[in-house]
Length: 256
Ligand code: MN3
Picture 1 (cartoon, protein in one colour):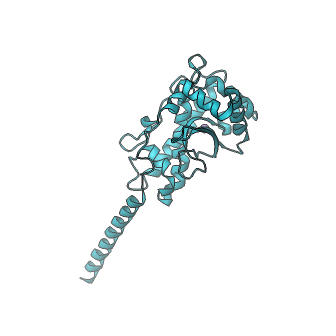
Picture 2 (cartoon, protein in one colour):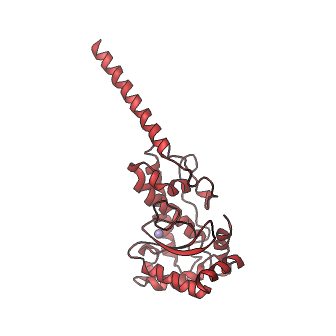
Picture 3 (cartoon, protein in one colour):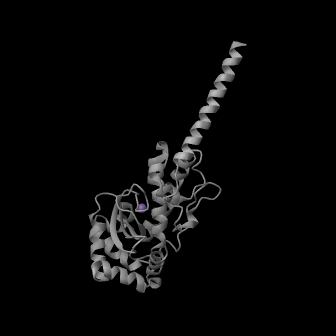
């Protein structure tokens, strides 16, 4: 009799604790910061709760000779795939996270439960950043000029396109260790700025020192260039301009 009571009391406490945990997770996970903006990469949303590795929008050899085939294969099929897999492992650990759109998760990093915060920051950031990166590049022949609106914004910030590129190159080569350099749009004013982030952070994240909408970015982790350029990051950054998809970058600039 006594033992039955204890068992049911324990079961009740356990159930109550689980319910309290799930309520506190949900109520602390406030997504309002992102709710009024259009997702930049809506195709990344999970399918039945699982994020999937998107295919490259072109062949592995499409960016030759500027970015080599082997680098593209390893970068997409291994590095990017691993970010997706580890992101799925992280969101599966917390009730209420699974099925959330990727941009909601990374925009609200600081509200995420502590147990998965760093994993979502690193691997969710990695998934978003690489998907963005593949889409902002295109083979030589299809690369267009920046739109009039974007060109005007660049001129307002840096006098001309060459001055902007020089400053972006300086920022990208100056990132210490692994990280990214970005061209970021202020969503209110439309003004542009160059931002760098460590690791897989990006300017969408609420933990980022300088926030805004990234419209261009370059991965300066060694895995992005070492096979072809070895220690010569500046050569890789210079070659990157040959494969920038200005049509897509301009579209991101002009959208809200
Ligand atoms: Mn990378």
